[in-house]
Length: 171
Image 1 (cartoon, rainbow, N blue to C red):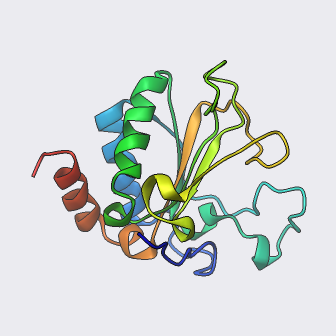
Image 2 (cartoon, rainbow, N blue to C red):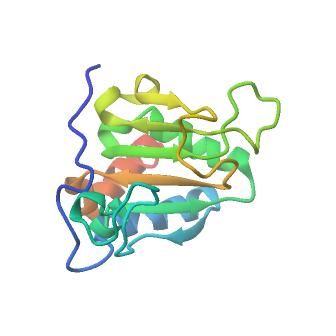
């Protein structure tokens, strides 16, 4: 399936903070998978050495109110969520996701360079890029996943709930 347009930070700084659909996504994930809220809205620049603080080009998607970080103690549960979301990226409005501890060789499950999904590369597994020591998201071995929702989902907690229930067999 072809990819979708990636919004990135083009919708700019959220005037209301964390958007309601993003909050609902976080709440459902925490309840379903036992994850921890490590943060959503933050008016900041990207974590990138090239980023120029205050330059809108480098605005973090967290500042749009559509991104969140969900931590875990139990990687197996976090990967249950990752796999479920990757199977339903289009329906759930997932535009980007990062699994910072993924290890393609599985030699050390908590110290890999990670992987990232982006909707413009394709849906589900087709949109995943495995990182290496030269090309990565900068959080090697991090015990959390980063999630970004489309503007439509980030603004519609009712739709987030309906899709979540459907893909989790709760509808």
